[in-house]
Length: 390
Image (cartoon, rainbow, N blue to C red; front, side, top):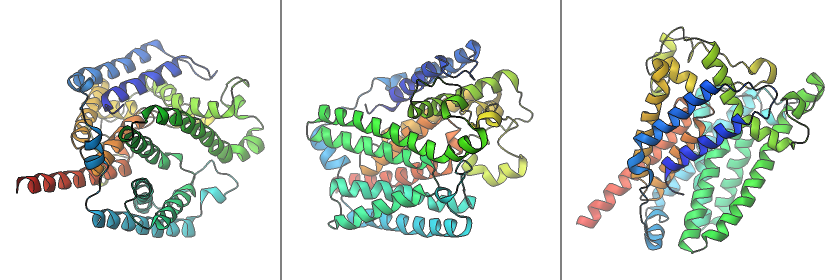
């Protein structure tokens, strides 16, 4: 379960299979494009084959004493409180200035507010993770305060109805509880619980989807969710949301791949966008000239990482992106030796999962959390090595 290379390949093959079923009447699955996508997955598999079946044998004692152990609680609490305070102040500013999506009658067009202020708002994702871990591992003696921070972070993030803001926490929830069950020798019990969590997540996802578009569907389109997305009425709404959310990026990417062309190559600027944003904005109008074919009729505007990769490096772009992803995975997997390394690892697994929805390399918050936890993991490892030598 802890091997990110296997996870990436299995997850993406699963999405390709779902997309190939073509359960929506609006889909036109192209075999040539599907073959191209599969070759990128195979390429990632080949470059990571040395680590594909490399299972680090770790004892329950090692997990309990190293990975799930927070020696410097003062540093941990400082990070927790600072991210919560900064995130809360930033979200209050955004909501008071621009409003909150959850309070709008039409919740399809999400209110984002100021772009760079959102970087600070997303620190609530960090406080959400850390407060939950604090509760589970009893890091802080004041459990009520940790629960308060957890609930506040959850509520404040919910105001903009951005489901993507909760997926890093979902990954943390899964991995922390898996490791705790591993220590307690109750993995089978946890797997059954995970199945229930998965069902709840699907229902939660469908609920938020219905909540956001109910007004537009009823008042503008005068139709149901199933009819709008060209799916049979036999499918429950929650499944429709999950299916379209997972597979529509491939449909957009497929049509772009077959029907559109690159006007100006970006030579890696999309891949490194968070680090080159000011320069990129000066050189290019946007990430590329592609448009999402499904956006006009269905409002589905994401198209995986593939179009951005092609804009960067042409037809070989996705393979170069896979090399970059492999390097980030390797670093995260190598640092998976303490609690911060675990969080670094979880964030890169999360980033990899988003690659088939958007160009996750351009999502600054994911890379910021990856770098933050990676640096802290390295510092803790270095201090631990020094202390063991002296």
